[in-house]
Image (cartoon, rainbow, N blue to C red; front, side):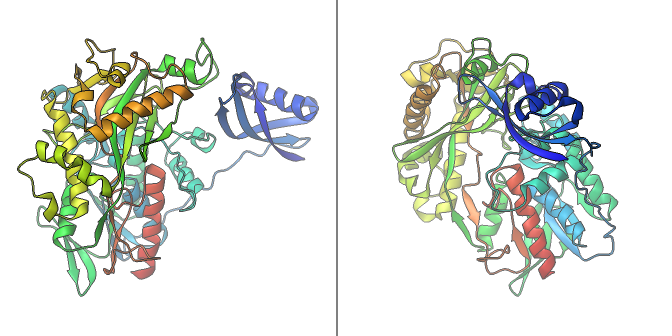
Length: 532
């Protein structure tokens, strides 16, 4: 007989199969001699009470042989003679769109402005040493997109959009560990994800698809209301329907679409800082124990959201045991982000701490933008979506100017920021280019500064001790999502009024992370295959 049970057990009871079996037999009244095996199906940490528990789902085999689970594997066939589809961008949306196209017997031609993931890793290391970004090979541009070097978290709330389990199984098929099929908040790790991405690319090539690196799209070719291909910087043209998966940092693509009078609209996004604590402190706070996480618990995570003056203030992309990294794609501007290796083993925890910004908020930021970019276009003469982009860019430039030393970032202790006083020193940090003490409370836009200050006070009410000078704010976090959306026809995936052009993923404004971008890429591939 095979049973499935959901159980709440202590972390040490979930730590290995023998202990897990003993707990199942004890709680369910089963004879251990008759239980031939126990399989763990799902697990999550429940730290809501003083005693931290593990919530697990298990399959129990009683008096019969254990059947090992066999994850579904997708077989990809040769498509070298199939109709071509152009995929612009090799981030999660683009890669999963390309793989789905192969399933649907279409030949993907992937065009990526950056480099292959292995070369990209070298450029990122050089950027830290040289204190200068390669503007075509960085944390935003290159194979794998922004997701390749921003932690590899696979948790999403976008379950209504598509099959999350399918995306996780595909990651597993291309090399991710079994853990991503078990954990409630699955995570690959920035050290493991590049190899998985390279495996995906090799599958595309093995099936007769194409992948072109260092090939930047400069024009979208239109004929009679239909997209018929793209033109690239070197003059190359690729013909066929186009899936546009260019990510949330390709501002030149937004400008191109604006020049072509394609339908774009502003949408809300968020900006703020990256907050870094000692991981040991977060473990003690979240697990309610002076001893921290102990032997059997993972590095602790947190998630906060509050409303301050009608706008959300929330944690974003929390990276336990992680690193803060320079994540911009332009010199003379500064952006930071967070990531974690697969073992989440560093001594720091970090997360974005950001404030919601809506298009109607723009007048409150107009003085700040004019001060930073006085030679910029008059905001009153530009579309709202361009004003949102300009605000994002203004904060990045303004942050850079506070230090103006390559990739060194301005930082301030957390309690000092809330109390409005300068920090005389800074704690140790994972941010390798280096930090410089700076009074963020004096130069962050007021709408962001005061909401962050109040948000931190509210977070501390929930988790006493979270607001501390052991933590520091590192500026600035601006690339939470795209500040605009490429409008698609209702109920369809094509750009409004243009057949054969399918914008998808974070850059199009329809996703917010690796999994939701992958889902959106697959959906666009399916629609494209139906139309092509």
